[in-house]
Amino acid sequence: MSLVKKFATVGGATLGSRIFGFARETLMAAALGTGPMADVFYAAFRFPNLFRRLFAEGAFNAAFVPLFAKEIEANGTDGAKRFSEEVFGVLFSVLLLITIVMELAMPLLVRFVIAPGFADDPEKFSITIRMAAVMFPYLMCMSLTAMMSGMLNSLHHFFAAAIAPVFLNVVMIGALFYALYTGADPLATAWY
Image (cartoon, rainbow, N blue to C red; front, side):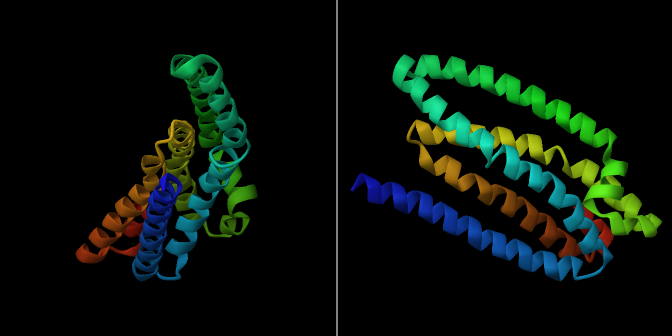
């Protein structure tokens, strides 16, 4: 029965996240349309999302969760807490360094990696650089959240980790509703 309850908890939270994600994308299409601001927003958001997949959902989490679980087994929750504090400190430092380097290199990254085609349009290029710079710290927040979610899962607390993605969708939906309600132009909507 416990397995069914845990499955329902995680499955229900994941389903909620997908429903809110669909609503977010629908509102995004209504608010930004298919014009240049949609291109800018998605180009700027794609870059930190790529790094999030590498750090938060990729090799780091695949390595950290088993080590954290082994630490719980070997040294109890106190040992695992010390281990996680050390890993958190190292991960935070690495992510902060990456974020600073990426922020400083954002004009080059946009020109050669994120959206090379935008270089021909100075306004679009400039907005993409600024928006990508604002969005890049998302990587740090999401990677640290993924680490904590892995810890919660190892401690058999599944709901908080599963429901966390809903909050990003709810905040973005709120911003999009506000933009649509106030009749904001696509540029202001992208910034919201």
